[in-house]
Length: 143
Image (cartoon, rainbow, N blue to C red; front, side, top):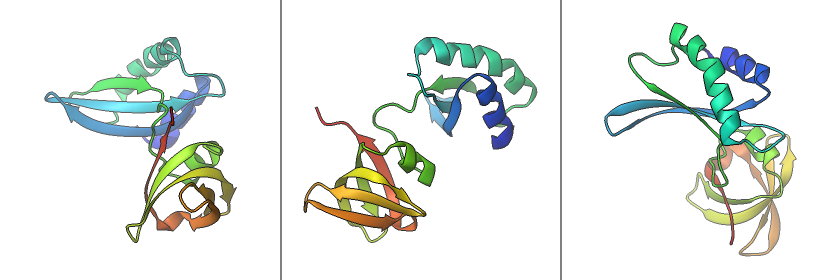
């Protein structure tokens, strides 16, 4: 199943595609679909989406061979892999690793074009970081 088809299916369920991944855990291949919504993603919503898309994926599998399907919220601590992920995470805290190896903790202030605006918590300054210079990004929550 291609990404566009999956996005359209999820839209019909009232949710949006955040990301997918295929992992192996305990000798089982798992195809995970992370969904978002304007409303909180509940266990009931994940179950509903699974019931709707599972039969379709049986006919048009996303991966070869046997796999388990999981539908989940991306959670509080989640990877930011696209500019849209950053855009939708404005106001949240993020741990960044840049292409040059620099690490920083910051608050996402927004996006402008292909740049991420952040407030660096260590040196207490605002910065604009080109998306192409971000090697890894993950939101986090301070208790």
